[in-house]
Image (cartoon, rainbow over all chains, first blue to last red; front, top):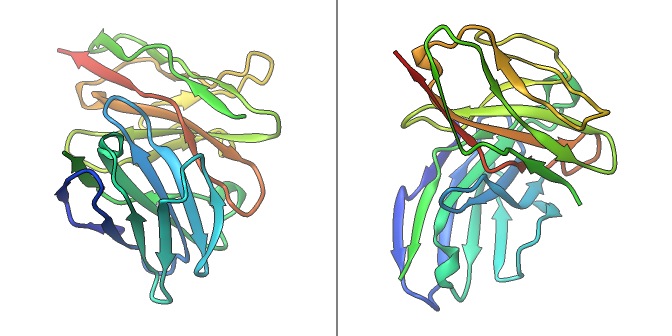
Length: 114
Length: 111
């Protein structure tokens, strides 16, 4: 399945953070979501074959990387208090379309910004 | 812009009673609608999707394009159905089929 590290993280305002995700075997599309307390997940961006494939309404200080081994990273610079949230990654197979398309979620990384 | 609205944050029903979780959406194109569920201490997982027209764990959901709704229903709720439920939509086609989620409904089934 999809794994994420670390499980929890505490940072201070202005710092930078890197979150990691390992996609499910055979998947080459990864999406990142931010879930604030009491809200549904909000799409940050998606990577397909190491290229950014779509982006939600997040500033450029949110950036990502996808590696050939289907692991990926979410980087956030100049952390703000409002960045405190659960960060979810989800992987999906390239060939998934229509009936078979599905995103498989990881357990998330809880980021707290003080 | 696409939007998903779940009007009830909390919903409690008794075991054996019918349950309906409401979901309304706005989207300019052709969407695909999903229900995701998160049981206690578990990860978010797909429950069902409108395109497959399946019944999963006794739950069904019908896409009503006229009312732009995708309500989740089950005729007889069970205690194990207690969980957080999220309605979501994605574009039906295209390269970046990101999900737009509602804010979720916490369902509690009472004994």
